[in-house]
Length: 393
Image (cartoon, rainbow, N blue to C red):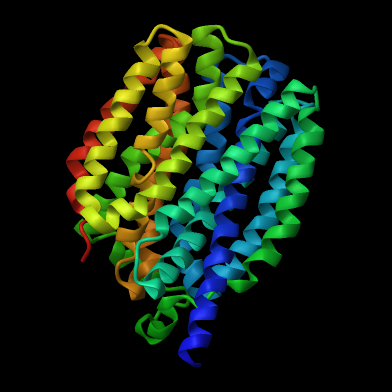
């Protein structure tokens, strides 16, 4: 293959990776934007909402440790395509099931979490391979694609709420879009970098590499770094809208709009972040961004006024924007171990990204949802201390 052909393939892989990130963000935010309506229909308390959200964490935490091996065996393209179809089926179960009670919602969300978790690992492995081929930082922009998808999903959800479109109709349309579009969109994925190391593993799905990655100190530290930022991101995704509604007494449509602003700020940070990373390096940029996010969280929780809380949500989203993508890049610094290490880091990160928000629900039951978000500030302080772990190999 000529240099021109390689460049064309890399460009195709780049756009396909953008599509994968955008669509997984779209489906996630579409669900998240309807949490208040699902809560009201089922009559759930904050702690009960937390329990329902825990089903997503359960599904993801089953999928994530398996994902590195699956990507190693089947490749990122087939993994993403298959799990996207499953994701659409899961959203359809939630869309119909919430009319009948909590149990169908919990089952649908567990399947949703499983598919989202595996999809996440596979597309990050592909993103890291494209980043290596390009020779410059681009992973945050892929995650900006995720954020673009979440903004689109949140805005669509806000419009659906404002125009009284039912949860069922809204989410069934989203489910169909994801299940049909993603398998077509990811046809442009490039071959995964680990394929040239196929002979290194005796296990059929790269199991030896996965076990080795779980014993590497740097990989575990990167995973803990991602965990802190994932806690801040996951809590914002699931609770910003509800905190505005319950804590500041705003209307549901305005609460969803603040959620969309949080996501838009995160998108901006991820789009402009690669230039900062290339110029100043991973460690100082991550430390500075964590400080911005910390200020935003404190303003959101203790600002006392809707306008101040809105500004805090913007700073919160902007500041946390680079933590997760930089952690994925750090995990994939060596292509041969990329699937295994990304699986480990994603597994640790999703412990907070998915189990953290239910924890906020339980704290919100004891105190208030708004004050419970102070825990995010603690996580960001820890992330600052761990930021040296993402220094390139």
